[in-house]
Amino acid sequence: MADFSLRTTFGETLLELAKTNPLLYVVDIGLYPSLNLVGFKKRYPTRFIQAGISEANAAAVAAGLAKTGKTVFLTSFACFSPALNWGVIRQSICYNQANVKIIGSHAGLASGDLGATHQMLEDIALTKTLPHLQVFVPADALETKAILKVIAQSNLPSYLRLPRPSSPLVTKPATVFTIGRSRLLRTGTQLTIISYGTMVSALTTLKSLSYDLINCSSIKPLDSNLILASVAKTGRCLVVEDHQLLGGLGETIAALLLENGLAPRFKCLGVDNQFGRSSHELTPLYDHYSLGPDSINTTITNLISSK
Amino acid sequence: MSYSAGLALGNPSSKIVCLTTDGEQEEGQIWEAAAFAATYKLRNLINIIDHNKYQLGGSVDKMQSIGSLPDRYSELGWQVIEVDGHSFSSLQKALKTAATTSGTPTCLVCHTTFASGISFMENKFEFHDVKSLTPAQYRRARSDLMIF
Image (cartoon, rainbow over all chains, first blue to last red; front, side):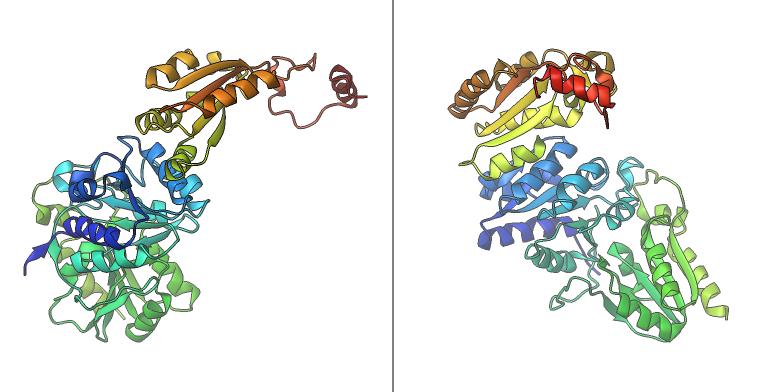
């Protein structure tokens, strides 16, 4: 299966959207080549604002610019934005309901050779708590495009998490993204597996198991009905996330299930209160954090065998 | 000020006036914004600094050195105008100059006296965040300000 870059798609899609939307702006925090925005900068120099390495300033400039009627994409790595400038995002973007799309790239363990400083594993925790902020994570390049098209039309602030590496396609070109809706990629009876981002591709072809696989690309708002219906059916739930367990999607889902009277067999796999570490090879890295195929299979076996 | 810079960038035909204080100049983001505004030549941005030399916890320079504000803003490429912040005519004149600048943002460094005119409060930072006055203090303040 060929891999496709979500970041390449990001830059291409923004260029395409800018053609028909003259109010689409980029406020970049110095890393535009890594987000494939060289073309955007060249084609739309007056709509490409370079804030330099100043995350706090850039977030508030983006908010002010958005308040003059623009749709502003604020671009950086997730470890810098929304991490370094969280308070400014809270105050200037979210409180003002400014039409800013925060793009945090290189999130998750997969930015392995940049090491722990760059392996942002807390961004979902930081963003899901902020009022008015929507949170989305595409599973592949196609979904990156689908989400961008939709959020460019929405006036609310959004956070879009992007990974560094390319990944296989798990969605279809015809798949339409809807805010607050996630999709079942497989259906079955024994277990509900919920994941997001490029982790999803590792979960599409599990053998000897009948399972629902939910690609939870709309983290906030969450597709509660889909999740509740699936877990009510299977009675077992596994959440897999390339993020800290504390503050991640898993605890949001656990609360959702409990509040709705469901008490399934439940397990969440994620990073357990640790920082990332450098690794050029991704397989041993995910294995180290119990997010590799062996850990996933063992966890599923335990969930299925228990009553 | 970053937010104001964004407004100024997106709305070049409007004048954007941002009010800041000297204590606030300790914040790194102010200087990110000052550099940004100079880089983008935001001639429609005016930063008015109330330079009264006190903040909630004490005198500004004892909390954190902020150096010379006129020098720092000039160095980054701003037009700087120093005025007596208690003089309406000086402020009016400075704002007129700021409005006609070509190519740079303008910083009005307003030299002011903390709690000016109230004898027992002047330059006493303890009154920065005062919630209420005693009846005697209240009468004295009114008298000092010639409010009868």
